[in-house]
Amino acid sequence: MNDFFTPAEAQNNSQREADLLAKLAAFLAYAKSNSTYYAKILADVDVETVNSRERLANLPVTRKSDLIDLQSKQPPFAGLVTESAKVDRIYQSPGPINEPENTNDDWWRLGQAFYAAGFRTGDKVQNCLSYHLTPGGFILDSGARACGCSVIAAGPGQTDQQLDVIEHLKPEGYCGTPSFLKILLDKAQAQGRDISSIRKALVTGEAYLPPLRAEFKAAGIEALQAYATADVGLIGFESDPHDGLIIAENIIVEILRPGTGIPVAEGEVGEVVVTSFNLDYPLIRFATGDLSALLPGSSECGRTNMRIKGWMGRADQTTKVKGMFVHPEQVEKVRLLHPEIVKSRLVVSQENHNDLMTLVCEVQGQQSLNDQQLTHAISESVKRVVKLNGAVKLVEKGTISDDGKVIEDLRSV
Image (tube, rainbow, N blue to C red; front, side, top):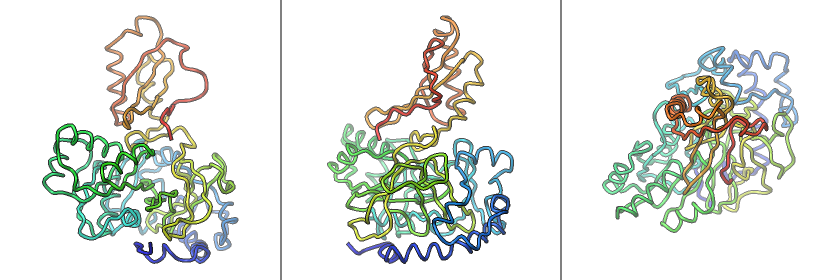
């Protein structure tokens, strides 16, 4: 295969590395001069000397989990956005974390992932990520349009209407979470609906497990995945051989030992840390909180950039449920709203490829254990704070183990 979104995908990897490192010092100087945040944390750094991965590794790490506190003190973006930035849209993901967007074409750089998944000019794409407040819908929207596709801005939910749209408009492709594509397939089969026009998909926002990939394949859908965040945009993507996630062009990715700034050896699991050359929203050694590991060599598809294994869990306890980040701070906020709760833990599981979450709450006394009104009130708080529906289970004091976990993810990876 030698058909790529950009010729840079097949360039010599040593040349790519040299080009990225050659522009690093100038980019750091730009961020330091134009961003109040980087002016502060790089104040004692001679950025002109940072021209290698070894010297990059000496710079401080900015953690995604820190943005909640940083932005609360300096809204909306904690000074990370540059003075010359063009911010056309502002989003707020759970946390809350504010994210900017410049509406320039493919600002999130997702075109590369769509192209690798087989999307081409003239394709119609049913986009089922949310366009409401969080940036997921627009991130995929921009990437599909960068490949010349027409986007059906469907958003999530309303499965009957979604099936109507597919039957009427006959889109060639789908983008969104893998679990929602599974829901559409199951409902179409149960109702005898024809959604056979969909032959390709780009899925994201959740773990994409082999059994679900096989199920899509059996339905005639080649579904590849993209790994992106609301802050960085595209980080990695699959190509046809399914041999790991190829790192996107124009970013530097490090795999660090969690909680440190130290790179790990090839094959060792660590935290994905990204330096993104975004002049509006520079992110330097930005720790995503996601775990992965470097793979040796390059992809069989001919793309030469480094590869990672894919999502392997969280370095912190933040997790994704139905494509949305859920933070320990949110779980604690729910607990504080109800004085009856002694201790709580959010348990995330999966049934039939659908994410489920249950807030387990320790309460005092037998009377509280059977308090349906309290259960309902806590459930409403979960929905309001976490922005997702979840079950509530009241248990006796001492039931939850003292292991420090606030969020327990029981899903297979």
